[in-house]
Length: 332
Image (cartoon, rainbow, N blue to C red; front, top):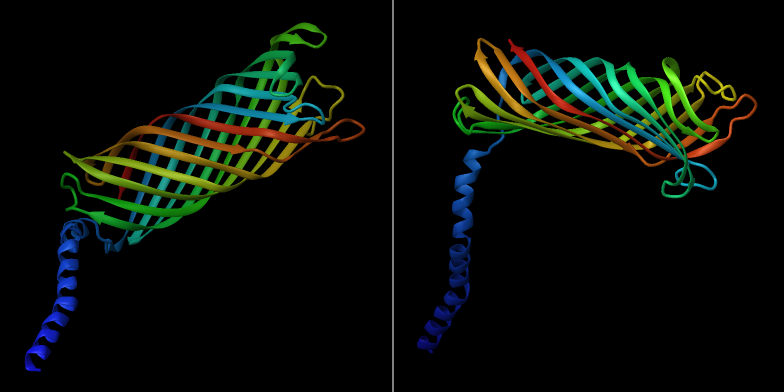
């Protein structure tokens, strides 16, 4: 009887202890990896004092804006495209940090100095059966934008200033983006025949406004010798869009405006990457490349005639702007 009890106890230990040992042996590589990774990427405590930074950027940007609409029979029936709308944008930005919390703000303005306006009309769906095409010079207008974000430092790793040390920030915010173009002169084939107008003749003025909520992250990694690699990615999942046109040569349309459109189904993405060189004494220089893009696939269009206002539908609206930038920042 005693041997039987000893045998049962031994069997019980094998059934309970051994599986735990086997589990620990299988988990050993994972535990070892965690001991290596966790010290390298842990939430930062941040600084107790308030840190402020002011900066400026010069953005050599090129834009593309397209607006197409549907009528009752054709989808799309008309395309309005502003292509190569170049603008040298001057931006002022600010950053405030206290412990892990941060606030970001930026304002940019610029003049449109070059570009082309294309106007196409179609008889059939999918841009088939084009019966009207014209091209104008788009060398006047301007743009304005403003962003405001709040967030926190999520992770930091390594010793500050050492090779490979870096950080990761997350933020949410709001953006306002407005662009205005003016086209003059005209060359093309319209429904009534070939047309040519001098460049001093105003043809159309267009204004688009995008507003959106922002959700983004940015990271910075030290490369040594005062250089850091920086990258920012922003999603704009919820947005609003408004478009207005004044057709200066259309006597059958009102001039305040001639066409208006709006949508609450806008979205976009913004990417920014570059290098920053910490010169010393709080001063740093930077350079990189930036891309902005917004889209909308719905909305209502009002063609504002002298006597009635027929309603059409937005086929698609797109605005993009991209290009290199240089800048400086002073932290104190």
